Image 1 (spheres, rainbow, N blue to C red):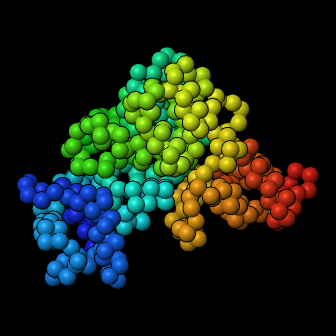
Image 2: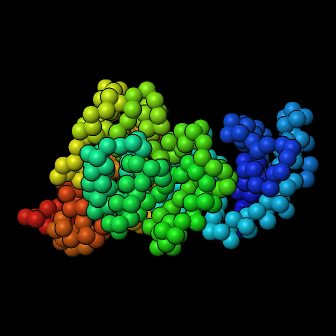
Length: 388
């Protein structure tokens, strides 16, 4: 795999690949600070690879020595990257076009500069929901988790998860068994995870994408598990909490963090008796139970504060509108993003079902959007047929 100079700088400075002792990689705060310094001087981060460039930066002596030491380990990095690729593990950086776009848009300065992954990277740019909950979920919670995952899969939504026991594993397995897709930000060793026979097969079949924000050989830690919550929420068009303890645990902390940062709309299963669920609803979570409405209809009904940039749920849009970059992600209506694509899909006269099939969208959701287009005068409707 070929990396750009900017991507290589991120890998050199932000990972511990090839480091045996001495200097540690930059923290996220240090990395962002260095990037700002370089940009303010009118240079690019890739210029750090140029001989003598680091000496001219307004950094402390220790910081310069740290950056130099990290940059100079190019050979050892190359060997490590080859080892990872031989295992089926790759790297994507914030400078790459296939970096998960929702993480970039929503997390901004909190986005991880480097992600290790195994699987089809394009899955991370598709619309989906997060299904989260405690490891010790009860029987009713297990059943609800499975039903929600089945519904999401039927409606062609990706399942974003954390790969843990309990709710995570139930939702992931249900989606895969139903022909769906899973993007999992794991809190354990990626190298170990991909040795599992079932995981390997699902990766080969392009059903599963696994992410790790740290060295693939790094094992589980509570801090790491907590940190990955933001990646799950930021990736999702809506998040659904199945069961949560109160004032403790990863599910609670992740949900509270999302409420504060408004990465995505938070739904809480109202059928769970746990006190944590009730308190999350009190703090702004939206009570939810499965209904005849599609999941997207439910999310859009409450004016979800999230951005979605694709029409076909399984077709990645490579070129995004430049205007999106300057608009806050919590003010974008999905309709505004997809309406032009809907109009382009209509040939002569078509009914709602034909348009929905062509765009790979649920008919109920398409009917809502078509009505808005008619109301705005962008479409004509005669009986049950639509035309430009």
